[in-house]
Image: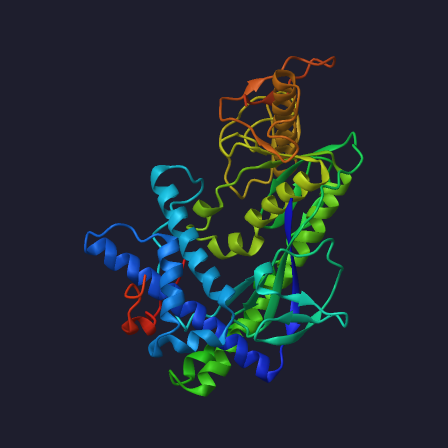
Length: 430
């Protein structure tokens, strides 16, 4: 399987100018190619193929209007055309329903005012790692890299990224082998929340760090200073970077925190069952800031990625499963409960903590689905990487020895134009 390894780089002033030149050339090539395809579509001409765009780019570099494109690596320009091809492919597959997830729109023009810029070098470009530990990029030079770990194999490509805070990173794509961990008899159900990030069926809890909330005071002051600066001024640009750095610090802290906790869960449990929350829907409510600050979507994605690598099982329980309404002892559904109700008593006499009870129900539903899938196919649902409980009405499982029930679910030249050198303001490629 392929994985990405990201590292911080520190280019010199001359290397920064070379990278800025490469960012601009790649952006112009992308916009020229996109404009050519849009004009061909508007005129009723056939769709321009990738080979035609590549040939036109080679010829255009010989003209006075685009001779400056030869100052950067040709691989960077060809990869910009590949990015356009990928954007169109995703758009077409989304229209016909062959691509999962949210609907993808057509590609848009890239802007030089975008806060994030990126270029990609493949093996054909001839990049290499020097014996001194620097990264040699064509027509850029030897860039200093802050190494935090070794690469497991030779990289097939490297992407140079400049983020909104003005920092530079490189992302290597390498081939790695799966590293399955020894099987364990433990599994856990997880109920995600806002006040407490996660409550697990074994009684353990993970408190919510609320990184954005803790940085709000500094962020408010930086944003107020940004609003006072005149648009287009140098001071406004500096103030924008200060705001971006605060956001970057929050984002990095949250990602590091999520990586540590997901790694612990994967290492200590063979199977993990988590509720499939509608994060996009919750982000449209008055709790939007807290929902985004929690990072539920990134948490579950990291769990599934690490489970696929280390031989664990992650199953998402359907979002319509009444985990907070069902008694984990008798399986009775007592109906919806307001959020302020944290403790409740079932008619069977069992006292429940709302979050712990939900985690126990998620554990029971996940176990039932995993057992059903293994009996039907002889393997775990969706391999070792995860699965999903299908929606359905809660059905009590058979009574155990103590007589109680547990709920479960069934669950050419001339194509490019010299007028295309200017970028479209405020637009961005998908």
